[in-house]
Image 1: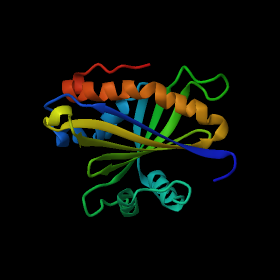
Image 2 (image 1 turned 30 degrees about the horizontal axis):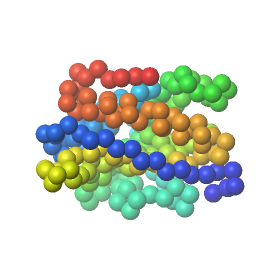
Image 3 (image 1 turned 120 degrees about the vertical axis):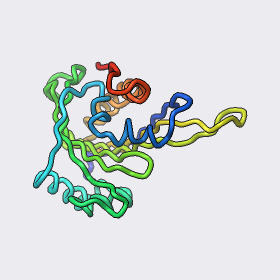
Image 4 (image 1 turned 30 degrees about the vertical axis):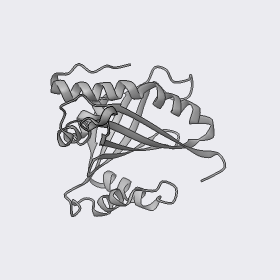
Length: 204
C-alpha cells in the first residue's frame, strides 16, 4: 500500500425482530443478491455481470490479495469460478448505480457506478465493492446469535464488518457515507425480511 493510501475498519449491528429464523434471514436479505442491493438507500439500478468481465474481476481479486486479502472460505469460492465450490457456493458480480446527492462538489458525478463482487458464505455474504477513484470496500455480512440480558432465549443480530481501502484524501468522505447510511440499510433489510417483496424501502 502506498503512502497516499490507507485503510479503515467499521462495524455496525442491529438486532432482528423476535421469531425470525436464522436460515431464512440469511437467505432472504443477504444471499438474495438483488434484494440485498435494493436495500441500499442510494441504489437505482443493478445488472448482473457475467462472462469475461466477471472472470477478469475474479482473477483480479485473487491477484491482489496482498493489498486486499480475502477470507479463506471466500478465496476458495473465487478460485472455483465460474463453477461452484464444493459447498455449492459461487462468485457473482453486479454493476450497481447509486445516486448520491451529498457528495462534495467535483468529487464524483451524483450517479456513481460500482461493481459488487458477492460471495455467499455459511452465515451470510462477503461483498467487495469497487468504486471510482480506486475505492475498495470489503464487507462481511452475517446473521449471528447473541445472548440476551437475564439469560433468556438467544436473539439474532445482523452484523456488517467493513474494511475500506482508499486514498487518505477520500477516507473522510467514504467513512461519512458509510456511517450516514448503515441504519437505513439495516432498516430496509428488516422491512424486506418481515414484509417481503412488497416492502416500501427507504431511500435518501
